[in-house]
Length: 382
Length: 230
Image 1 (tube, rainbow over the protein chains, first blue to last red):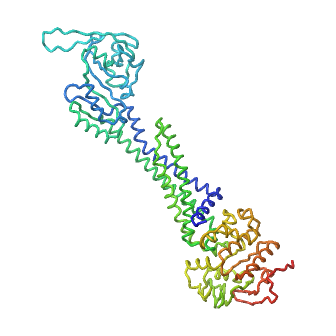
Image 2: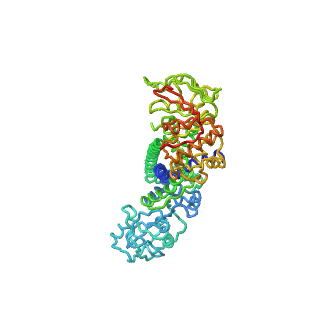
Image 3: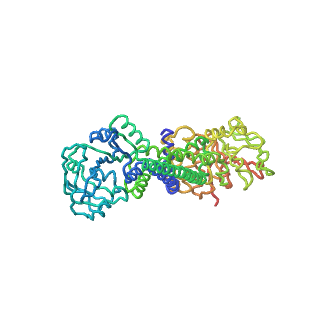
């Protein structure tokens, strides 16, 4: 048997056969590693989680035409410059002035499946239009026209006269109210319909006035996207909804700073806890250390053996902490953000390394005192 | 040249002279007993001979080298290479098996050799208990593991501090018989004891009182075998 094999046999025997003693030390390291790994996971996942939460407050990017209006193709070109994974939804809007029961109202043609993604805060009584011939009526208009879900109403479109004598044809179409929209905002003054219905009503296709985008990215990345689009697509002017992006950045920065602070405090507490435990372990083993020195162990050997034990404990604690930390982060994420957390494989070796390093540093002081033990005094029981 | 020579050794703690001008020679292959009441300086002397302490004054020549002048690091090396220690309270590492305890001394000395460690346990009659933990061994068996550990590196001197102090008569006899065997093989033995029966088995006995060598007796009928009058 070589010395290395004997070294590992000794330290594993110490850990395995002194289970009840070592379990306390292992627990303190594992708990520290769990909190550490969990908090780091949350720290890195917070932007994604909070980003998703912020997306509930609506779009954070707008496409507007640089000159009058643009087309679906322009929007697609702009969209192509954003990472697909970051796009939550892109909703085109076209606005036209129409008449309902002879009263002028603003109609907005859109794609409701996308609107659900970019405006998840919309509260709809009834339902979104699921097919042609249905409208979503703003709450103000519903009250004004005394229209409820299921009622029918005719909407009339009269193109603006360009001043020539040419005959202008009105277009009228009957719609059924599928839902009443409540937002507490200006949306309640609009009548929403499928873009295709508005195109049919106006006999103008492909024209878009505005596109709202919900993009899951931090403020810096959003700015980069906007600059790229403005530079690359001349017909599209991309801008950020500052009210959303700025507050998102502020909250994220503060939240991440808080998690980082807690992580550092936990790390310090873990070190104190491990150092205290290792001091107790060393105190308990004074006689054994004295014996080892009496039979020829040098100070270096004693330090090496105790460090070996400490680091092995650190590694095992780190492995346990990585697993429990992920479970901890997952539970926090499910309970706080109502969504699962993504597993970060790189965090496993990092947690183990940090645990080993923290245990090693925590062991230094008690081990130095262990090396100074006088064998003669200890063996006499003094 | 004597294997061990103590010249005018003093060990002073404040006003207390734990050892007071002690002179002693131990020849190679000799079996010496050190006797004396509690506080007579036996343990202090054992610690100095065992390189675990240094005298306040005087020379301790081991194989011609004055170990009183060596630093702690060198004393550890001398203790590891030349001295085998046996203690009254056995002092085995509780979580290592009998064979691992023996191999521990090899580990610090040179290279652990399981076969050789097993042979050492066989010499003390414990080959079949090699894989047992100290808690699974009787007091006598634990002391025999200590003997095996002490002799594994073929030390110049085996230094035993009250080796039979915690043993019953049967185990005391086993341990003394082991010393007899080691003595016959040429090992130098220094045994510190309270027990006159154990002391008288040796070739020579020195008596300490108040830190001074009080008297010395030679066993003219030395056989190395213990006789019980109890």
